[in-house]
Length: 298
Image 1: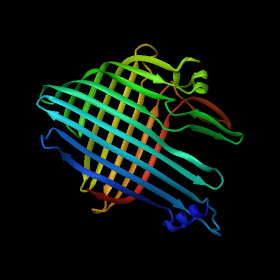
Image 2 (image 1 turned 60 degrees about the vertical axis):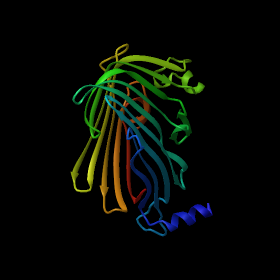
Image 3 (image 1 turned 180 degrees about the vertical axis):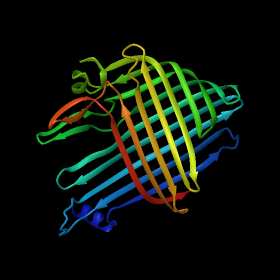
C-alpha cells in the first residue's frame, strides 16, 4: 500500500496518462504484408486530503494492445486484427476491481469479384481473461469468467471495401458458437446456453461495418458496428455491438482518446435496479473510456 500511495501522489491530480507505443505501417520486402500496432498504458488517479467538498481517492491502470496484420496480393486480401485489453481500478472503500477485460480476434479473407466488391469468409472470436463480479451490499456474485462467455463466429459472405477506412461485410449464413466453460455459470444457464450445457450453436446473418473519417486536422472518428440475427430463435432480436472512438492529436507527442461501446444481447442478463429492487434481465451495456497521453512512434 505504501508503494501504491507513492505512485498515486506522484501522478497529477485527475490526469490520465497514456504511454502508447505505435508502430508505423511496415511492409516486408515482397510488399504483401502491412503490419501496424499500438500499445497503450493508461493511468488515472485522484486524491483528496481535508477536502471540504468530499471525494474518494482512486487509482486505475489499463493496458491495451491493438495490432493489425493485413495481406494483399493480386486479387486476394486477408485482414486480421488482434485486440487485448485489461484494467483494474482501486478505491479504498471497494479495493481492487476490474474495469476492462477483452480479447478480440477478427479475420476477413477476401477475393476480388469486381471493383470494391469481394467474396469473403470471416471469422470473429472474443472472450475475456478473468472473472467478473456483480457487487452488492451482501457481497459479490460471479457473473463471467475466462471463456465464460466466449463467442466464435464464422461464415461466407460478400463485402464492399472502398478503402481500409470504409468497408462492410455481410454474411447471410453465419454460424456462431457461444461457450461457457465455467461450471457454475453453465449450470445457471448463463449467456443463453441450456442449464448444464457449456456451449450453444446459432445460425444466422451477420453484418460487420467499419468507417473512419477525419473530422478536421488531427481529429478522427472511428465507427465499428456488428449485428447478428439468429435464424433458429427469435430472429427479430438482433444482437448489437457498436463502438465509437475519437482520436485527437494535440501534437506529435500528446494525444487525447475517447471512446464508447454499446452492447445489447437478449441472451445476456445484466444487473438492473427498478423501484429500488435489484433484478436481472436483458439490457443495454455501456463501456466508456477517456485518456490523455503521450505517444511515440517507431
